Image (cartoon, rainbow, N blue to C red; front, side):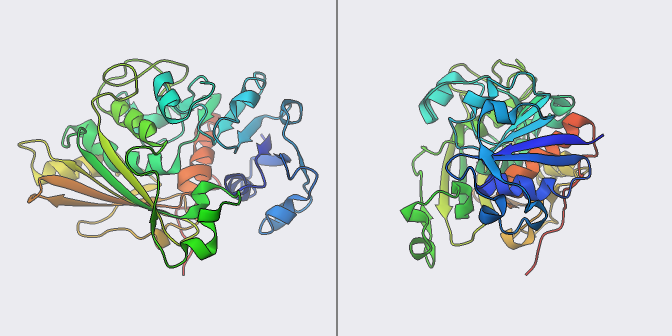
Amino acid sequence: MTYTVAVSGASGYAGGEILRLLAGHPDIEIRTVTAHSNAGQPLIQHQPHLRSLAGLTLQDTTPEILAGHDIVFLALPHGQSGQYTDALGSTPLVIDAGADHRLTSESAWDAFYGGAFHEPWTYGVPELLAGGVKQREHLRGATRIAAPGCNASTVSLSLVPGVAAGVIVADDIVSVLAVGPSGAGKSLKTNLLASEILGSANPYAVGGTHRHIPEIRQALAAASGPSTGSGTQGAGSGTQGAGSGIQGAGIRISFTPVLVPMSRGILATSSAPIVDGVTDAQIREAWESAYADETFVHLLPEGSFPRTADVLGANTALIGLAIDRAANRVTVVAAVDNLVKGTAGAAIQSMNIALGLPEDRALSINGVAP
């Protein structure tokens, strides 16, 4: 069966990466691409690397144009997807690459985003443990999927195995991320100009203000015990994890992203305290057992740590693990391509699962080098 697809936000980085991956998918026909200010222009003018899609023209992003497809991808800034998803009730599968349907907690949304709160959808990170099972079990047959925030999924993949196995403590997590500017989108911003970022490392959203923090807390809360609701980790609405109010009460994380001069990539270094009495072997076993059978998440051999260069263009997360007994902490280093495993690849991997297709279809574990 061939599925017809519309992609909104097709002139941006996330939309372009969704299109690049879908162009090689044998079960997909890319029928419609839409944009806002760039509507009416050839897609190839904004995505000149997508030669096989040169015949497409960007149309206006309206519910009427997006409707009538088997699958709709929304690659829009936060706060913009909800106005369209509400009008796409008859579309069999809708995948939102923005933030509008990720959070189960309205108070967390209000605190970090603001604006209208929308129903949480099934979270699109198949490898995460949620409610005692892998998230892919919730994705099977899903009709509404929230693709992850790239920083959030990278940190969550780093730490969820330890939280789920009870070998690390989640109330004193520190994460520092080196991130490429493509994660901020394609809009012209002074702080993202080449003259501003080349030769410099620039922290941003310092002091607990980054919008991916509640998403990380939500994932860690879902991994910490049996499900207490369906919510984003399953299908429908509700809240998971400890406490009430903002999702993941009791989980504390210091999260600091640093903009570095590479167009793609995230290198996340996260650490958390070790639970008293846990052995080194038990710690490593937690991550080994969590990812032993995963195609796209690889735990590296002891003493090895990933580079962002090794995941460029791939739907792969590489993870290195260190046990620091002097500090009584576990340190996890994870590398992903923010536009692939962090966004578009996760969305298409989740789509494949929802449709009952091979999970790795149109996705590669191989990066591009040099």
